[in-house]
Image 1 (cartoon, one colour):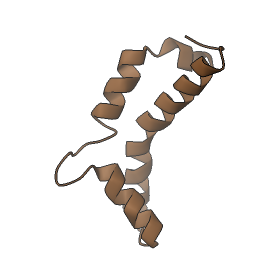
Image 2 (cartoon, one colour):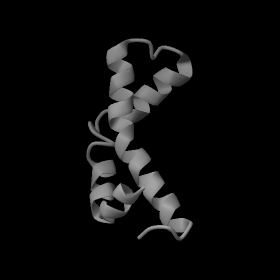
Image 3 (cartoon, one colour):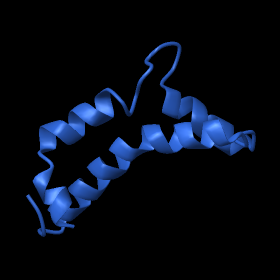
Image 4 (cartoon, helix red, strand yellow):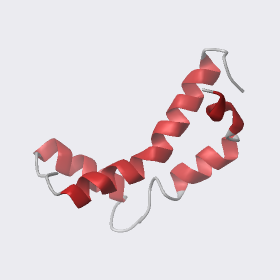
Length: 74
């Protein structure tokens, strides 16, 4: 998990605010894909890839925050 410690906080936050939420209008893309997942309509490979692509910054930020909360990282 050393790679999480090497990622600066501002990079993780900017990643979430840009790639994690883009495009912003009419609604964040990740929100649209999560709604599709909840409805069971997330079946096309391109949609699944899109969800994973927009979720990566969120996963990194959450993992970094959890590691910091546990006192194992900066």
